[in-house]
Image (cartoon, rainbow, N blue to C red; front, side):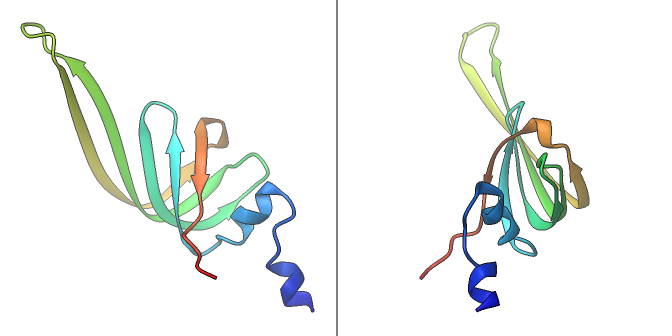
Length: 97
């Protein structure tokens, strides 16, 4: 009975609790995205992620042609502390029934 209670989602942070030790997707301000393993979090959405891939997208305008140039930069980080006030979206891993 206790395991059934532990796996139910009653409030939004329960979904994040169920994603501990799983790879999650986090969208941040300033066009940054993270994918990594969730090790810890708190009620402010401060998170510690491991084995993180960070993707930074920037859009620049060409001075001559006025076309948008989209650049993406990727890097990997072994451990990362994410401050919760920069978090826009947290997506848990896809679960199948």
